[in-house]
Length: 319
Ligand code: NCD
Image 1 (cartoon, rainbow, N blue to C red):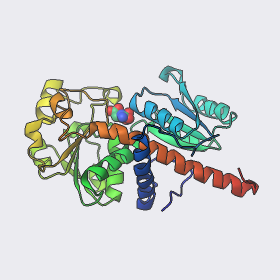
Image 2: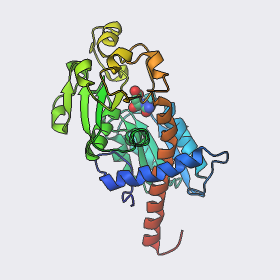
Image 3: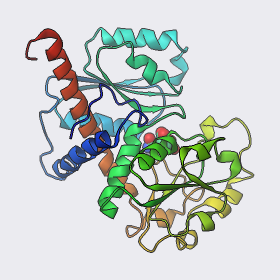
Image 4: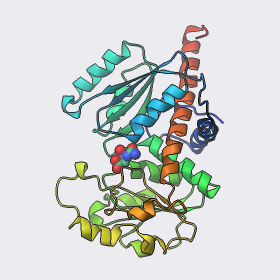
């Protein structure tokens, strides 16, 4: 099975075999990452540039580590959000970087669609590390790998995504991926945090946690994305925690072996109880971080193979 695309801009353009190809290779990289010597030469000689126009801890660190473990020359540029002057500046930056001949460009940007635009202007493989409230494909892929390893399959599961759906690129990418792999997705949250027209995505929408969590296999909690809110979407954090914060009592409505997920950064006592987040019998939050490195290694490896094959076809010369 192969991954046939030039970029990884979102889950939307992917077919189930593309997703499976990434997850299968990521499983192998997860094994490599548990060894003492964690090194492969899959990206040796290639240059990876990380451009994060928005803050990130996990995603940036894991893309950097992924590139280094595969032998790439990795450079991370700290782009301040304040330096973005929209459109032209972004494209100028892209052209400047393109002149340095990168092979892989990893981009996080606060504007939805910015990464797609950038991919049209450069000659390398582009990976979307999160664009506005649009997509965060590697997060959905690492979530999928975590689920597949915990549950032994990635189809016909009942999965609840809870909280601030409206502002979440993680939710959008996950809804698409889990739907493509034939799972039943439920969204749970207050109506103010539900995007309009969401039922068209083939999901079930619930306002009540107890009802929505009934018999689910997976509970995915989301952070309140305050930086994307311009007004009062919730009465108060205390009230929100009372109604939507995941604790042992609310989780008791899910299946007995249901797993708890969170993409991080986590706000303990707002969307999730701190003790539950640390409960290794239920929470797979640390596994998600571990799978993040493996999935990013797999995605960059597959994209680099396609890039080198394309270049070879263009020039007729081995590269
Ligand atoms: C998410 C993001 O940045 O979209 N975090 C992440 O990548 N792990 C979710 C969030 O910020 O809440």
